[in-house]
Image 1 (cartoon, rainbow, N blue to C red):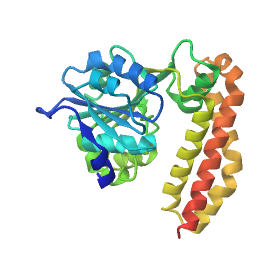
Image 2 (cartoon, rainbow, N blue to C red):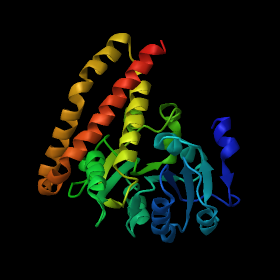
Image 3 (cartoon, rainbow, N blue to C red):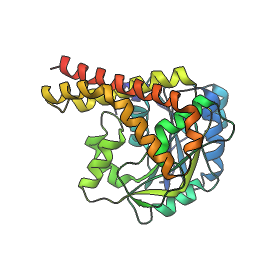
Length: 301
């Protein structure tokens, strides 16, 4: 952990023993979403520790409600960086990851622990919560079409960190893959190369509640795409970066087609179509950000 995180980190309770599970919640949005997430997690924390990693300052009142939590603050950090910091501070045998807009179901940690009894990493189901806005539903489809129910448990590397569980020993074995941020494709590829067992698991369920809105998600999508492109571009040659920049114009269409395919497989195409323009816009922001990241990689050579 670098000096910035250490300087800003605050532990509100002393460590006592080793918890079975470390729940790492990343938050770079509104306090209201974080409060709803923590309220859902708190009743499940027997034998577990809570690590809250925030990219914004949180109200003192909220922090006082969870005096046993570990609170880490890194201003304006992206979620993968917040997850990295939380995993580095985690002490549990198992690590559960999520983000503040998610509302875990009542049996979330029980199901996660059961799933990790015969797997090294699992990614659970993510459903849109009832009553959320059109932009929120589009965000859910854009990010989690593959994680919506129904689906069967199956081996997979394509697991969303927004509802995921890992054996911490395995994560530490591939620490080099998440040192610059916990980007799931990189980490899962590294785990699979070791022979670890990764599984898509429908029994571990969270619901995505109201997010920060369309404008905030567009900015986040652009920033995440740019950081991802920059990270991948740093390991590619000039030709590889130029090729990905050129292909960025087709990326939104590929992503939308993938989302439509997943909706059809689940018999949920009708619920996707009204928000499809939002989905395309969000995917275009990712593609633009990824292209900019590859430009950054070229400039840094």
